[in-house]
Structure formats: C-alpha cells, structure tokens
Amino acid sequence: MNNISTIRRFILAWSRLDPVELSEFFTDDGAYHNMPMLPFVGKENIKDFITVFSASWIETDWQVLNIVEEGDTVFCERVDKTKSTGGDFSDAGTIDGFGVPLCSVN
Image 1 (cartoon, rainbow, N blue to C red):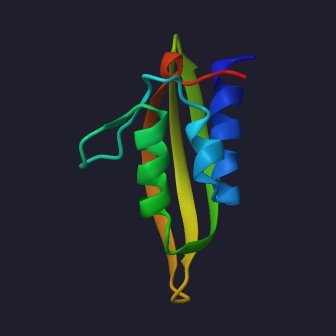
Image 2 (tube, rainbow, N blue to C red; image 1 turned 90 degrees about the vertical axis):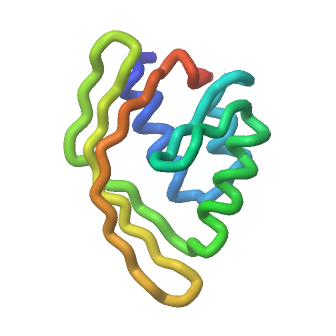
C-alpha cells in the first residue's frame, strides 16, 4: 500500500469521529502535531487529544484538494468542513505534512 492511500484512509476515518480508530493509524511511538500546540506522542495520548479536540463535533468532512508523496512524507492540501453541537459550521483550509513511518499501514 502506498503512503498516499494510507493518508487518504486516515482522512476518511475522521468522518467517523472515532478517536480509537484514528489513534490506530499511529505506531506506539507515533506523534500527532496539530500546530501551534505541542505534539502528542503515543497512541494513548493521541487518542486522548482527538477525543477532546473533536468533542463538540457532530460531523466532519475533510475534502482533499491536492496530495503528493515524496519519500516517506505526504503533503496534503484540504478543506475541513465541520459541524459542531451548537449548530455552527466551519470550513478550515489546511496544508499538512504526514511522516508516514509514524503511522501504521494495516
């Protein structure tokens, strides 16, 4: 499986809002760095962060605009469309860099 397909599966998994599923993409010593916060290291810490980070979300759809792979790094430009419990909608543009050796490829 190539690195882009792994990251596409990770992005799609966000729509299910399941912190356990999302944390399983990472190796035991993997890191999730949502800047400007400090990185969260290890599956349990990543799961805990995602749980808190997405607690008010009832729906999210991450739409990939561009994605490219160079070695073990995947860069992804996307728009995250999210609806919260208060009925608010958010469209957030982002560019991410994923170091795929930190992610499992099961």
